[in-house]
Length: 100
Image 1 (cartoon, rainbow, N blue to C red):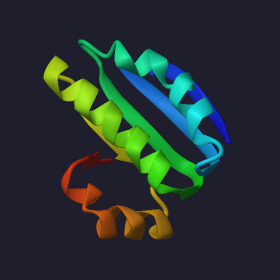
Image 2 (tube, one colour):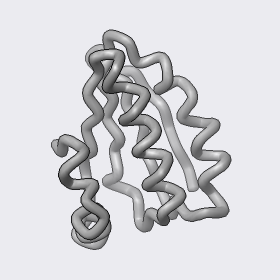
Image 3 (cartoon, rainbow, N blue to C red):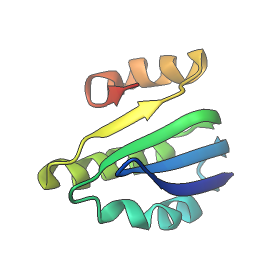
């Protein structure tokens, strides 16, 4: 699992590549620390290279959302493939997040 953080057009963007499974979740969570200081920035979780997400990965996404909302930031997810979109739909996450 590889993550890359960038600041683009005043947004915080985290790129995911590979499988966000239970084994990768702790490292990914620590790599997402810059997103905790999102005041004044929206967050984009770019999943165009993400192959799989487990419940641990979904929990990380939810924690980012819960941290960002009180600060007035929006969390967008972009680039979901059809399989990941189904996971988000089955878990109700499509009702929680905004998609690009």
